[in-house]
Length: 212
Image (cartoon, rainbow, N blue to C red; front, side, top):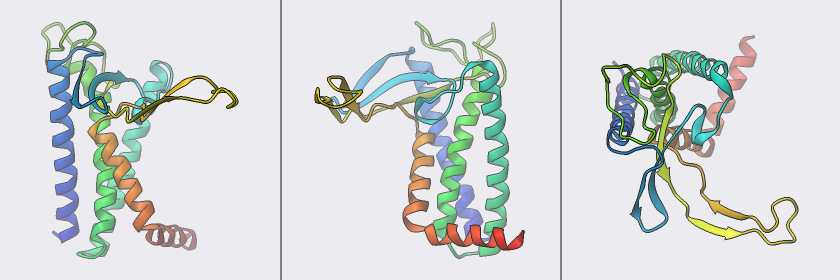
């Protein structure tokens, strides 16, 4: 096994373990909407669930949810295939690039686990602390689980000036979205890729075009 393969396995495994430990802890100790402050008023653990994409974005209805879950699974399969080929080709080279891809993969898998399994293995968190593997079954069915989010960083709160079109006079919070560890892994991986591996990405696209 190459160095990059070991790194990829390690990054994916560590990210998934941390992500799921946090989510299971939240589900089994807090009810939906509950929160507590970690550092002042700018780092808050705030338990929410969403049906859709990263940072609370959603696709409507159960059909949209199933489509998103299936799309995620197919996308993850493609990333795994690409990562395996990359590890085989690079051996011990381009470790940073492999780490980025591994973070994105791990984050995607982390949220897939919620979507596919959580509806079956947990009961509802609405007004109660959920139990795992409840005797009466979960709150939903396969592929209909809700993604658990908890990290909330309302760093800046203010009000838009009245003269600003559309949003004038309205209050704002930065950073408003609530997210999870898997979302953070995806964001860090993508930012790392764009900041330090744009040439690698460009070469990958150029090679793909020349192969067609």
